[in-house]
Image (cartoon, rainbow, N blue to C red):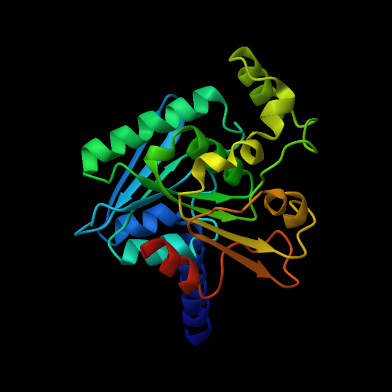
Length: 249
């Protein structure tokens, strides 16, 4: 019977590990007793996570929930709330921005969150975060940008980028102006605290061709952290204390 017992124990352990691996990041928080709401805002997936004893401060992403979530985990442990509105391939189209405003108002009203949110933009999420902040600076407490896409001039063949450009053109913004909008309107958000983390060897979104082209003079509070030898991934820092300290100051 011992071999059978061993086999059963092995498969039970394997099954439990597979279940844990398949468990979503937000479900882990639901199991811990956090309030987790999954809903839909204008047809987009929305997730809100509120810890017990929430302090009203919050951070939100426009994409990639649960990916490289060290900062989110650390802030949730400190009483911050978390939000996601999945706008991954919309490249800050006018409708996507209106949807995020609706989402933010919904989260604030229901959970007593601050009017100003920290936007967390990883990769293409950085494009949304920058444009949203530039158009709604009064709604953004700070920006945490990680390997952020900041200039679309080399991505004009991407069908999602072209769709967003067409939507902006219908709103009166020429495609050429849209592709460089984040850099050309950066002056609007120089009073907002901005943390940028990037891989110094990133071949996908090279810092020197993206955020590195911005005029940073006059920024009230800015931190740049370059990771030597790091490519586009991994995002964040290990440990992520410098990012958390910047955002919680």
